[in-house]
Length: 261
Image 1 (cartoon, rainbow, N blue to C red):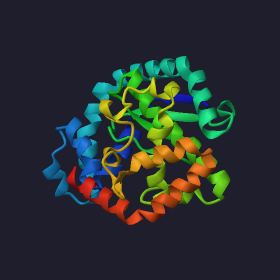
Image 2: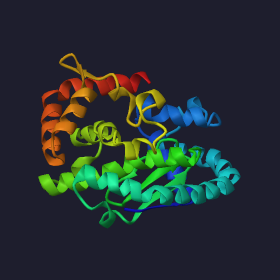
Image 3: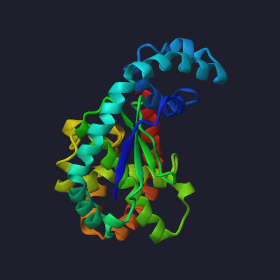
Image 4: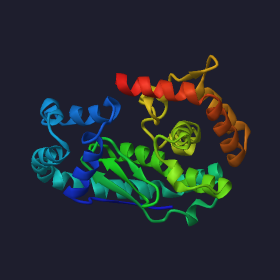
């Protein structure tokens, strides 16, 4: 397993930001961008059509990027060095968690260091975005979250034989993949590298999972118990059956939480 961090240039940054500001995204996804970039006038943007939004965002972010280009390039060097220092430890933990040889898988992952504080991942293309304001420890913590997704769906797909097209939001399979990160990250070899773990440090999963309840029990507690008592594929089966049983509650909680952000 290997991650190569790079600065993909301005176009990738603006395309990534536009994913969350030019559609009908809930405040959960758009507000962090307004927080980090007060230069973006939320009211002005809301009065634009789709084409005008792209032009407006380009006008705002072009100068921001040019002023930060050198800093982003420095972060790329720092992130790459920090990851390489801990690569073996990470591979050992992932091999044990997923029952595979992590050294032989995903040696072509790319971490794009960009302006967007929202950091999407792209499974088929094998890249994910990293916010440039992260320290090297923060960037690695975020990256571990994403790397877990790549291994999770590799094993999931091999076991279930379904389609990668089913692994994106709003699929329940996507929701489960976001829930399980905390349980897998609890391995000390991973958690010790992640400054966002545990919850008290900000959490390594979406915050609305932290207070999600089903049958009077925190869902994350149930997920953690299932993880610790099962093989990885048995865990996948049991956890997904659990989510199917409580899908209505899960989706309602996410809907309310994302709109209340």
